[in-house]
Length: 246
Image 1 (cartoon, helix red, strand yellow):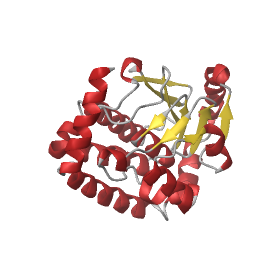
Image 2: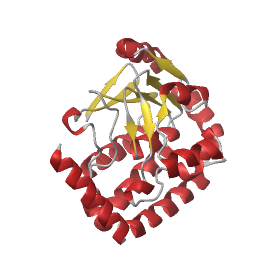
Image 3: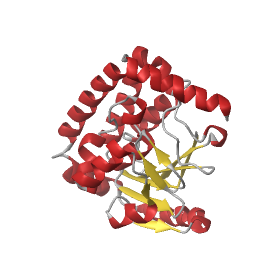
Image 4: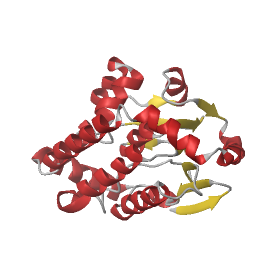
């Protein structure tokens, strides 16, 4: 992951294009560390999360994460999601392409989400023998409405950029060719007064923070149960078999 700080703006860029920016256990730790440190660093006013390559992120790196989930992966995911929930500054996701699994769920904990016209959003948890994570059991019905959220969860509906915008999942769709220019335009907000940003963020999140932390804890408890199940084992074998044939 590329990490830069310029003009009050921290930019985190997933940069594993050959792996479709899949999130490894190490990357969970890295994201958590940056967010926790920046929470106390008043030189950081705004955080931007985006990616290089065709994908925003294909979600969990199955080879490095889910096979070890029962050991410590669940705790690493929990720590990262907790860091998003507690983050006291402005955080913006700029989704450049498909966001799958936890990559489609943690962005709901960002303050603002923008996306490329090439972006899609998919949460194939049930098909993989898993349970919702990233507080999506609460945030998806809240943002999308119950029917669309459950269509995505149970029927694996893939949300297009246009649908996401119409439903309020993203604030704006950006032409893919102008995405980098748009990201640069966000740097002017790095001059916002940091204490005022923190006070307003506190007012906006204080009522939901404890609930989200409880939801995250419960979701990951259930995910830990799922990864010990026969259904997940079979799904993982099928996934690895498909990957080996590509």
